[in-house]
Each structure stands twice: as structure tokens, then as C-alpha cells.
Length: 149
Picture 1 (cartoon, rainbow, N blue to C red):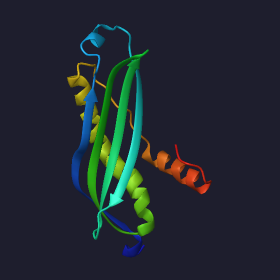
Picture 2 (cartoon, rainbow, N blue to C red):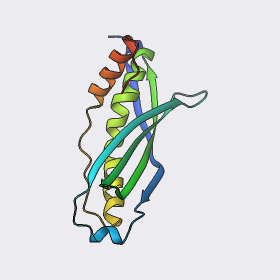
Picture 3 (tube, one colour):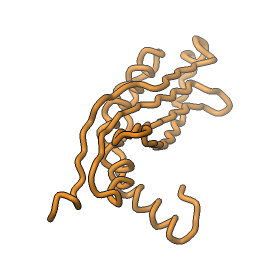
């Protein structure tokens, strides 16, 4: 394979872009013995920085914990990464949606676990995410003209 068909991939920086934790019913919510229902939502965004081979990738995870009508907490973290990508242009979307988020995932998992624990709640571990499967679903949806989930 020639070098023209290969992609060069370098991590330049990892950072928290935005972070939020809310527990509006504290401290009364700690008297509730009901276990909350936890909902986890994830999103990936990326953009190329002008006149460079640098891309910003932001992995956002929002965790909502509710019990009935009561909101236990809301936690949202945007974990950013700056990546240098050169080479095969057709491979770049796949790297931005699979490899980059895989690198950011451990950082965002730690940030969420710390925030939830410091908020007075039990440790929350975000499950591993199969970014390859999500990318393939997105590509299949785009090919069939549907909007991805």
C-alpha cells in the first residue's frame, strides 16, 4: 500500500469543553430510597480547523437520573480532543467517528463518575460504547436516506 492511501493520526490535546452537574432537589432527594432510572445519551461532533490538518472532536454524554417525577440529577460532559489527521481523505470520517471517540471515552467516563460521586450519589460507570457499530448504522441510514438515530 502506498503512503498516499494511509492515514496519519496523532492526538494533540485532550480537554473538557463543557461540564455541568445539577441536582435541584438536594438534599431532600437523598431521603428517597427509590433507585432512579438512569438515561444516557451520547453525541459526537467534529470540525476541521481552518488551514490545517487539525480536527476538533467533541464527545458529549448526558446522564439523566429520575425517579417518577423527581429529578435526582442531570450530568453533562463535553470531552474534546484535538487530532491531527493527514492522508486518505475518504478514511477521515471513519477516524473522526470511531477512533477519536474511543480515545476520548475513558476521559469522559472518569469525569462523569467523579461529578456524580461528588454530587453525593453512588459511582456511575458509563458502559463501553461500540463506535464502529454506531458509525456503520449512521452510514447505512445515510445511504437509505434516513436520518440516523
